[in-house]
Image (cartoon, rainbow, N blue to C red; front, side, top):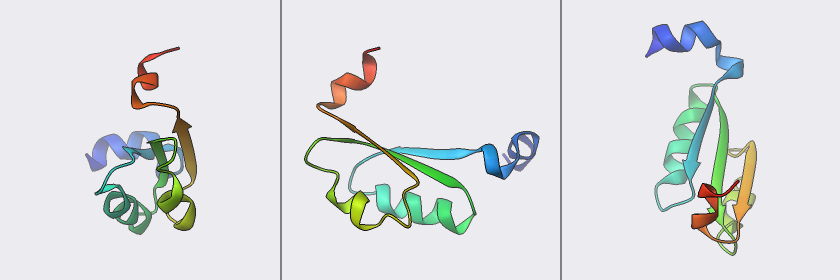
Length: 71
């Protein structure tokens, strides 16, 4: 994995997670490794990710998780 990561460079790599009960743990680990983060969550569930803004670089809020499949 480090070999692949090295080809991209840490500044270009972003860890993306679906907003769930374990997302903050993943985001914390990504931040510890110096990686940028992205959260995709459902409307009404964005509160924790806004409160922990230091862990979340970008937040995408969808009306419904099914919208992730639409253009």
